[in-house]
Image (cartoon, rainbow, N blue to C red; front, side, top):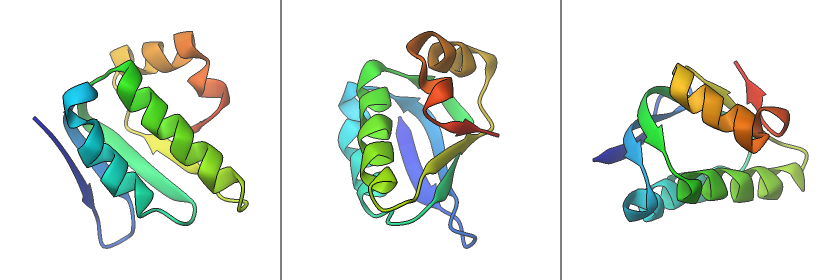
Length: 94
């Protein structure tokens, strides 16, 4: 199970497991982002390479217009995945 919701403050909250079977849900949520945004991972238990790819594509698209994604609330496992993949150099981690 995975869900992506947007708060009144504009933050996107990811909950559950973001894997290939849930990639379309994440892609739809991130396709709506047109300016700098924080994604809250505090409810995210797992992210696969498919999820990482969607985040990277969104970051590249936003960078073209001078905006970026920031990630907040990562658990230790996801933080390790980001570090190993080099994503801690691509995204601002809060």
